[in-house]
Length: 293
Image: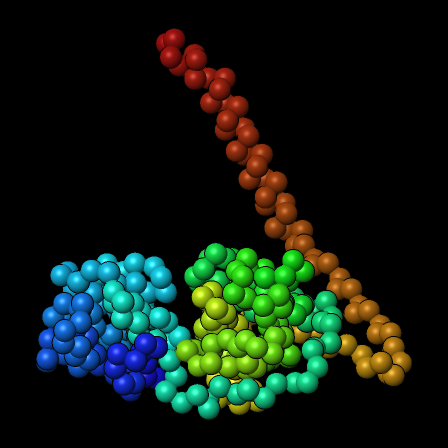
């Protein structure tokens, strides 16, 4: 990835791993003397935990996608970090990684079983007037300021029908519907694009993240996915006859004769029960008399 500066305050800075400090002091990796930044205004860090923004206590006026940040925040490619008037866009270092070759026609309607699986693919708003809302892609979704759009944004700077999001099998497509405007995918200006899970799409000043569990990541061959997740419930497999195989009834198993009982053992049980009953009777009859004596 790389850090770019939309207003030209600094040349693009490639960044892969470690800590990239930003401030007005000369020893910062991105040093802007004479700016409104404090000596060390912020750091962008990439480590085993991911990509994140750290703000020292002395720094103020730090925003991530127009939302204030006081100490730290997780970052993703496509985010816009503002340090006062300074804008820093975190973008792809190779725009060619985003495939702009899309199908010529929209997708065919999904069957019921396909719709159930496709309901997991969501477009989630992360900033702007639609913040927090999610949109499934079981049908193509148009975005724009027109009244008939599925994702309607009341913004005069946006076209009536700006773009359309479509699900084509295991690919999500961004298709431009307006000849004069484009969008940004992970910080890269595009008109049409093949999207991947986790992509951040910016339409004007409105940001969306594609959540698509199970779909291939960017650059991954769809035919070489990892092992699928096992279901939590299993059904025991049974063997059934083939469609063209005649059914052959099986004879029932012969019933087993009941186990025989030894007559001698039965008489012993009866005798033992009789002796026990006699003993109990004697105890109940003679015990009061013994107590009186």
